[in-house]
Image 1 (cartoon, rainbow, N blue to C red):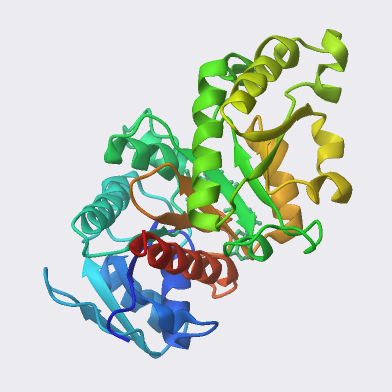
Image 2 (image 1 turned 120 degrees about the vertical axis):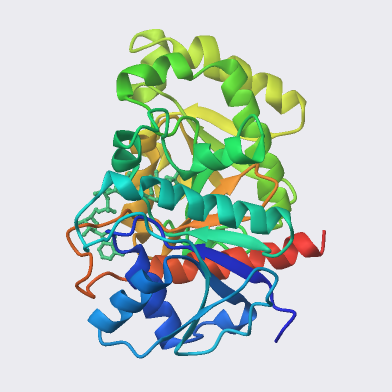
Length: 351
Ligand SMILES: NC(=O)c1ccc[n+]([C@@H]2O[C@H](COP(=O)([O-])OP(=O)(O)OC[C@H]3O[C@@H](n4cnc5c(N)ncnc54)[C@H](O)[C@@H]3O)[C@@H](O)[C@H]2O)c1
Ligand SMILES: N[C@H](C(=O)O)[C@H](O)COP(=O)(O)O
């Protein structure tokens, strides 16, 4: 199927599980509709060959020259857009010398998407600390890096379990069908309150509403919004952000036509009755929303960056240095992320 969308898979931190997940998927071949896209890995071909060999996988690594078409996905073959490691890499052992290599794989995939050589990108996990330690002191993750690379002001990190991914509402699918977006991402907790501003919430909620319509086929997305404080501030006795920032912002956005419920106490929002009435939840900070999502679907969920001019999905886990090189990592989330990117690419191409 040569008109299948090309999905660029950045292989992430070379010492982490990203490279082996890529070779595991490629060796096994298309499953669950994976023939619907053409995978091309972005990374060091020798590293990928080494990881495949060390896991005993029969895999042919095919380096593609610039402009060479990406072939149909087939078992045992992994096409690669080559980016060379800066230093030799051992699984599980981080090296700051390879930080720029990781960023180069992202730049390569972004350029390919922008040139329409790829219809979307999927990112295997990178290690944020080693990139910062290498001198990229402002680096906080793919999400913000891609925002800046694409020149947009705001993006939204949303994770969704596999049961809430493909252009349908979670209704009737139970509480494990979850979409959780974040108002703030990788911030120290003590900075969160100051970051929850009306301006930020307005930008985030507009993007979330628009992209739930665009990518998930929801005509009037219902978004449940968490409060920041326990019991959503307990009427102002446990914090005033709900009264002074969140509630007035939601009221203004309802006038624009957004369907918003909240601010709601986060502890009871994440219960089946409330979730059944929401297509997505907006959490105020990382560990308010993501532990629930990962409890519901770790290993079968995907991370989607909303608000970008290109398709980007990712896994629901990190570099798992403790597992790297051992063949123990679960490729489930990467499979889900790839299938979702292909689905989004097809939707995008239909306009
Ligand atoms: N998309 C991304 O790039 C991404 C996502 C999350 C975390 N990270 C980064 O990864 C690094 C390590 O983060 P962490 O330790 O908090 O989380 P982690 O997800 O790497 O590991 C947490 C636990 O989950 C296990 N685990 C993770 N992935 C697994 C898989 N595929 N199969 C089986 N078990 C798996 C690990 O072994 C570990 O016990 C950090 O630098 C973090 O910022 C990157
Ligand atoms: N917050 C995400 C998670 O916990 O899964 C993760 O760190 C991803 O971040 P980026 O996609 O921005 O790298």
